[in-house]
Image 1 (spheres, helix red, strand yellow):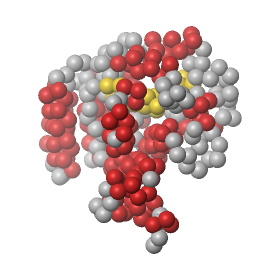
Image 2 (tube, rainbow, N blue to C red):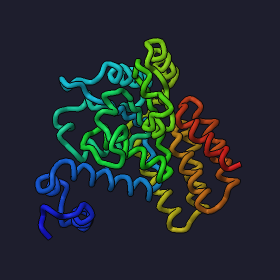
Image 3 (cartoon, helix red, strand yellow):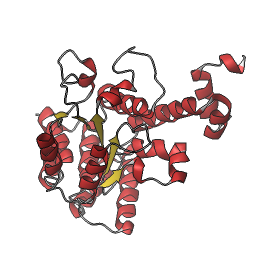
Length: 301
């Protein structure tokens, strides 16, 4: 097969089999193909694996850069507002030049984020195929970010919330006939200065608990261990051990989510409801986790 005519599936196969590295793909087939390959890989891993346990939770800000390579003022303001709460804000304007050049690192930041904020401006949609030419891929970072998260949430029922903040004084983006808006599961119209201020103020009361790096690593490691024990068939042992870990660190909402998933896997809806109820009670200070767990609990009634 001629390299110029090789299909994406064939490139993906060679990457999966170790014949090609991401660096090879970039050099031979281009930056966009490598980027799309990584997004597909992470989507599959997220769908197949257990929920990650990360604390503090990561929040990714997706925005369209200006022509002068600066962030829009709202993106910077949102990042600063979130960071004071203790959230791990993923914001490309704060990355080093080396990080921005590292394709795998950039994609990984999106893939592991708990919540993704999309700042939806006319310029944002002008650089995605959500607005025109539906179904045709358009090579841009905002295109990749929107498709990746939308695919996880709507097609694979992932728990990652998408939050679209519409900044468009013309009102055209919020028109009911504007189909792209329907992509996002939470939409806030923050086009006016008053609504934008109210949107930022909504996060003022959020506070993330302080954990040492050692505790963060221990929680993630133990959660993975309990998940592996569960997958080996020792369901009751894994559930009990994870429940004890969740009791010690009740503010880590991902642990409650894992308990719900374990109970669902073995068809124990009573335990799933108890775990979701516990998660709701313990994570009221972390509203996105709270809402997700509350919805999960209600869906099991």
